[in-house]
Image (cartoon, rainbow, N blue to C red; front, side):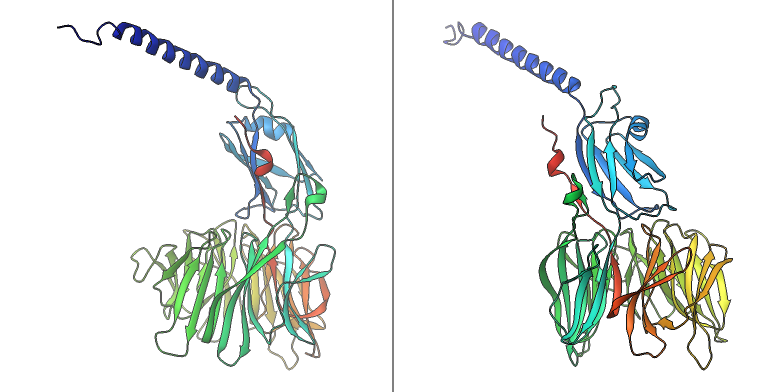
Length: 462
């Protein structure tokens, strides 16, 4: 008996072959159209993890000729810079010695690997950070942001006291600790939307405040915060009751991960997000980011040492070491090498900082004399003193640090006057060591990194 389908199979096979051939032809035509289409700009974002004064990450729709992009793109005002990367992802890195005084205009141009030119794009970008401060008012202490025009923008309600300030490393918020009653601390996070990159110069603006989120509150004896350049936030709190201490990390996507860590002091996240520095009674431990409890991969540095600063673009760090004979030393830690001593003396070390590459260091020394006298030293990575300056009439406030900004080559700190009655945010030029004291009375001050990304404007359409 013959199959009832026998007579229809040849016709269906020919139809199927025709459909497949048609689809193949359509795919070939689409491929040829895409091959002839000009390359597009996918996204541009401000990059905080950098070794230069500032950086942009640029992504294209297809692999580009890096030499062509470097030759045809124009940066205004001109700054020494380099292009790095391959395929469709490049990074524009400004020279570490560049000093940025205004927004940067970038005209992007160049060809892909087939010689097709991208349609020229122009964007504006301001790598300079914003100054955050806890300002003292008649109504209490308030977290405020200094606008680029010099005005101050309130970011919080009035508090009895604000004990710590920790900007997120991606510029998308600032965490702070309030103390409005005995043993009643609260950890708050003010969310911010960066607006430091735009297609028009008028689109550049100060960060836009969002919601304020409570991360921890209650009967707390201490709270410590640390952030890295990915925007992750470490929260370390301890309560009155035994066993009430807890430590966790809040990711940039708002997820929480609890850590089972015990330290003898404040834990610090590494800037690049690869790990954390945990103080112990034997010294300092370097743990990977996913560490929990005992970790066999931990690296330890014994001795009475305190972490003073990270050199964020090089993996280097600055430590303070306390010696049994009451002397103190400053050490530069270089990955893979023993700590390098760059200063040793009897003076008190009030604060220390370094540039991104760890080639320049700044330390504030306080002489042991009847009158408080602070001196700022600029050193190179070998310990040679390049410049020194006495802070006549001013001295570092208790607990103040030095916060370095590579974009403007300035240090930020809080200083008190010689009478000890007023404290001010102070800007210090990283080369001349000249001091500029700002007007409002503050108790804390930090840099908020520049941030932002453009991708919705440059969507690649097939």
